[in-house]
Length: 284
Image 1 (tube, rainbow, N blue to C red):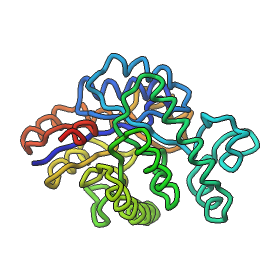
Image 2: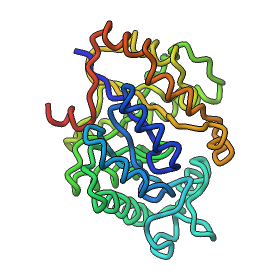
Image 3: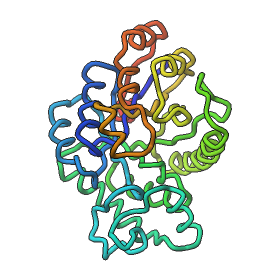
């Protein structure tokens, strides 16, 4: 059997992203999303989620590119002199490799993020993270402990197959980055499974992250392996305004069009793919 989780990242980051995710759920194949506890549009996301009981919601743990949930004074190793996280993962990883990141601070902040989401009335289906920092050695152990403490039974493992391209033509740097991340993710997956955490069998959407369009999306579905797969996407509305705020070069409207297209719907039916959420796979 082929089962598919279509997970939209960055729920709570901006109202136009929130609205795009909900549109992709109501009118398309999005089954799951990941909520950022410290993001500016968190309350807006929570209010939308309350009206979508079938949308699975996880926590998009954040250690880069944003504001912490904790008092900055209690997590000094994670923030800069303005009380903000590093803007990108290379900055964070460089600091971590030099011993500048306290895992106690990581545990305190990530625990606070999960607590905030739970306190908002969200039934947390899984954990993942912004820029995939949850699979970094050391941090993954903290995340697994947090999942166990809160009774969260599932986690993303972003181990996209090393030889998978799916029709996308990435830069060499992007291929190398994906390869390194996939290797770390495989190791994290072994730890998660040993701890009793349920993870999908396959993951897609890393190489084409932010650039997923209908043809690429259908290409993945056409070649979906047996078992449970996750496809990561980043839908949104009013792409021009989002690109003025975020310099990632994402194509939010293109990704929304991919998950709501008639061609995608027909492909899912033809390939007999069952849409599921992280909650569904933990209840099997």
